[in-house]
Image 1 (tube, rainbow, N blue to C red):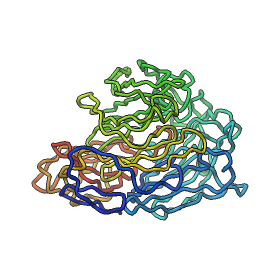
Image 2: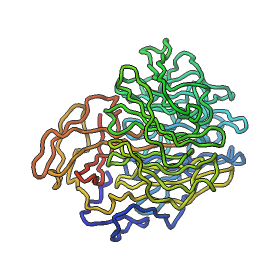
Image 3: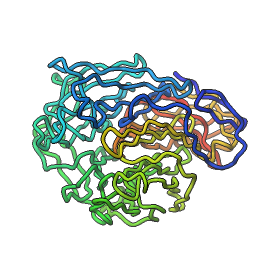
Image 4: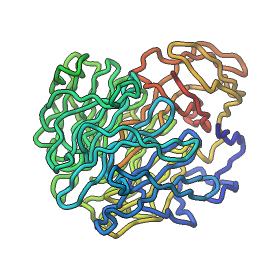
Length: 495
């Protein structure tokens, strides 16, 4: 397991893995001295602390049926290790461009779907796992049909749900399915349903139901936000309950949405998005614990955005970056980042990033609390490879330290965290690592870990007993003090 840097003085890790004094009390952006070797259309954070990028043919039809690279980035060393996915049954490279992905309970990333052809796009049925320890691809049984721009989501059981996207013939795949290693054929499909939009934003609720926030890639087919109930049998169909009230409901294209922290509150926020070439700054929040959930308006973004990214920070705020006022237009994308505080329902404009990022850009939380931004592809073969890291203001403050914490947790069990700042800790949180593409992120969630008692050097806390609140897998464990300053994370697995 990668050990955190336990530093009590004011330090910042540079792109070369060395440390320099940080004297400012403000946030800042840093463009790294090297670039990504491939366009990071898909990105995930591994429990090793390394970042995984892949792009398949990378929105370039001339690269179809050629070898496709993926890379593991060691952020502390500034190095990349290239990997190539397996071949398909026709001995051709499996093209993972515009696949979907989520984490298995063991920390391997499941990647499903991809591209069989361009213009019109046909979806691949391929499914792979990437092992973050061995750093290699493993081929698993394919889906029942192809998917391009699918949504893939980990359930509380640890099984993987896949939905939407054009199939292997370019027709909409209206048959959701679930992957389990215990199924004889790997994937079991439900009966055919309605058409769901590509990369629809889905969130696992505490009940085990799923919520479609109203954000997706492209048109929403006139589909309102709704709660989906998965049946107990594969012979039954998914049922739905519409959630009304969403403002600018036609502006879901490349919007972003998050399950607000903590996950136990069951509130989802949707931000921005576009319709045609125009973006909106609308922000709506829905309380899914209500008997009749309805979206209500919240404070809008300071800037209209689409193609943007939202990242949950360990101080329980929401960081928004990337994006543009107009569709895929970098001249309209040099927008300052913004941070939302759910407690005060306010947005704060923070530092402006140096690199414009629109379509096919990503952002990821690192275990030290910084945010990676990468990618951007405003038109075919125009690839933004520069990497930039955002350091929130808390990076310049004295931070709490985790001396020790369990590497394995059980649901509903108490455990102990050793920290010299125990008397000043406000929150303990588990944050699930991100696996993101196209402004769509079904993985990230911040789970509150209630503090039962404390002494001068330790905290006694309890992990949630609800597998739907914290799906089984690896999480970053953070402390946050009364000043809103988070620790560096340690990794732990909940099963």
